[in-house]
Length: 316
Ligand SMILES: Nc1ncnc2c1ncn2[C@@H]1O[C@H](COP(=O)(O)OP(=O)(O)OP(=O)(O)O)[C@@H](O)[C@H]1O
Image (tube, rainbow, N blue to C red; front, side, top):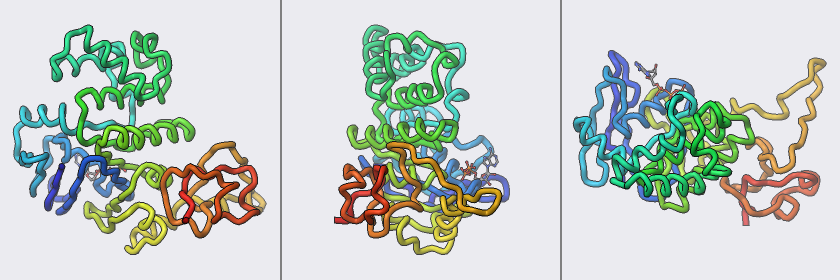
């Protein structure tokens, strides 16, 4: 259990995070949204003890029973290995370019988990399989530049899982990926959190991805949490004016126009997730939906053709 109370991060005269209180329990999946610079990353960094050297962290952050505000680097190293891990947005920058990806994932298993090389290799290969890396034996020997961006992000997720963390912080993990790969990575993170009863803090600008992968969400503005609640409720019925503004600023298909002003017809990609703006009226639940749109009781017949709704559960 991770509990932040009045957690603040000051950088010079400004406060990047202000008095944030947050309880994260095993298996919680929490989205964090808000405009650029509102403090999402800094909150994540404070929760893993990786704020910039110039930052001053105050308040309280308890990881299980240990108070981590003011803790030294050695204590943080233990917590980072076992309790909290983070996946960053740019996988190429986060991986050592001159190290084979298999060796990268084996290293913490040997150093922090005390495994032999043979055990670490076996464990790393099974992590590669768990995160959906095809042909793990072959990928194991490759360098980061030899694999795709999506596979690099999967390697980083495997790396983050090596010490079986209680909380995984994913900071815009799909920003550098194309829409389809981004969707798969989002689904992977949500699945891992469910399967491992691991908490997930999913920081993103992509509200549809937050809708798919989280149950609760926080909306940040100017370092504060201005709204929090169940993801479905916040997205369908935002209470704070800032959240209302954030949701209304989403790109909507009806706003995409040809140069002559006519509405542009967007191609339908089989299996693609429709933007939130396209969600049928009457559905209140954000999250992965097993119901095909053609069988969904809440969708009007005209909207059913050729589309699969992966995004909502039927309101029933
Ligand atoms: N290394 C740093 N030194 C000084 N100020 C910083 C540093 N990193 C971030 N900041 C400031 O802290 C505030 C919060 O930044 P943060 O990166 O947490 O925003 P964010 O919400 O994650 O933005 P984005 O969505 O663009 O990643 C901003 O005002 C930013 O300018």
